[in-house]
Length: 493
Ligand code: GLU
Image 1 (cartoon, rainbow, N blue to C red):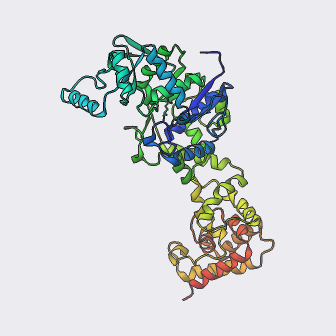
Image 2 (cartoon, helix red, strand yellow):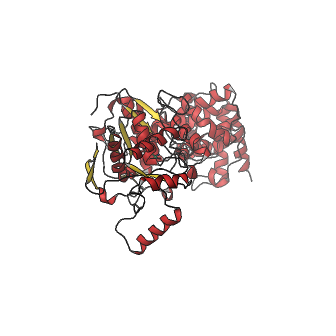
């Protein structure tokens, strides 16, 4: 391990919304930087113009911020190693590609797309063991190169791959990975439009930005020998590589994909997951602590995180576990915080106005202790508090009002008795209400459930609600009496 300051980067290509796997990569890099007093850098790998999606970067940055993964250097805040958009760094890539050509480690290739297609078609027909460029231009004599360039023929710059030998990649998690050089073709470094390929831009920038550790998805393993060989060609020290384990679908069969549900951070946010829960969940998708502790806030994880506790075996994305974490973090939120996070969903359901006046927000805060045990996802809040936020509710259907084996008339009489009892009550508090309603059940000679359920349904329109007495208090006497009366009348024949 190097004694230099740790510098790690998250290097997304802005080709789509931040993927959940990308979020894990970002999280691990962030945690590693924070655990080591290092820097976390956001670099935008936007050199593939054909796959560029304009709104992707905005989404990636918003999602990272939402997760609390702040960066020390990046496209918006700058830093000493900028620019942080690869599309703004073209002169560097051109300069380094030309350097390799001058040193005989790379070469100009003038092959046309048509010729490359033919080569590929032939390889396919012959069921060749390895595909790739046939090295047609690798040994062009300098005079020919000069002539073709002078003619203005388009060219790319290709890496001169060693034809024999093996390249060893040191992976901090997987140990030594060996690659037979003869299986690697002469990949393109610089395209004919002057843009670099991923291989060139990635290594040049990791070097220039003094990146010490590269933590990235395992899908980049096949690219890594190419990168190692480029570092050797330039005479640069490579960073430490650590390839993270593959994410599998919830059933453990096959890679995680759209078929298994949401794959972007944005979707999880919209579905009402908390960033705290997502971070905790992603942390354990590949990293394990020394004991069997499961609940880690990001601040705590940032103290403990180390490479040697990252696993290499594929890991299944268990959505039910994520939901479990979400319920847990929801229960731990202070009321005001939970109310603030629920507010957008309540506004969307038109249960609260936007902007929300302070007195209504204060009321919402008071509801939170009653419901926080019951919701796993934030949007579920609407079903638990709608009857609190509405002045009037529709009269509940008769089937809901009648417990089993009761007649409308019996229930009507219970509701009328409850109305009369509650009307006289003061103060309208839990203790007073409980005493009065239990007393009433006794007096009417019915089980408490027989009396409480119709009251609950009458005032909330639902059979599952927070505790009855809390609910009545928070609804307030006027609304309770009004709803009892309406339900009672609905049962009158
Ligand atoms: N731009 C690459 C990606 O989108 C970066 C891979 C790497 O970290 O080297 O994943």
